Image 1 (spheres, one colour):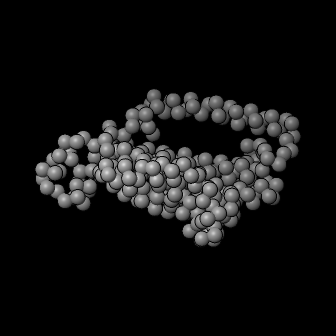
Image 2: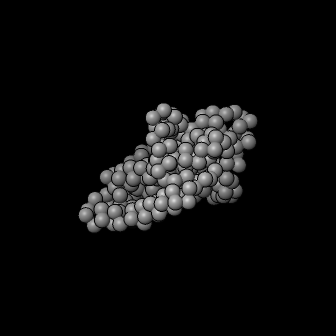
Length: 258
């Protein structure tokens, strides 16, 4: 990270910190009493308490397990389908209507079906997350494959490479930078959907922690969970941006500097 970028990031923190300090001063001056708001200092204390009794760490483990497992399943299936549709024009045309009809269905709308089929727990949440993560990977990987330089495909045919070697040696390496962008997008979706499922119906993870805090009339703890979820999402995105630049260099998007 160069000095200019570091200064820009410091400047970007000035306004949020000013707003937090201003809200803290207002909350203390007005003796805030609310079931939905709490002073930032109270939120920090609640977050420290949740770390002290390991409750937020256990909830984080449950949420990240469901999110990452669903992300892996959805990404594998989406990548396989995206490559298949990108290679075969016939298959792409045959499945276009089906894909475009299923893709707009909100993943949360599958909750009643998943709950009846799988019950509460990890499996139901993983299924919903995988469904949500499948589509970005499928759509972007299909576009990436179809955007490969045609001469690379001609070379693979001239070398008489089998279909499997053509995929592993030509198609995936050429499309990988754009596929990784799809994976980054799906990683954020996985965390959002996992927490949403837990808030809506699944009694585990960070979403369930938010609901328990709300039912206990603990706005400080409820907001502490929200702050922690935001920190996890931010850290995850930074890690993936760094990995993208380390793996692909100039092929990475220029606007995604860590």
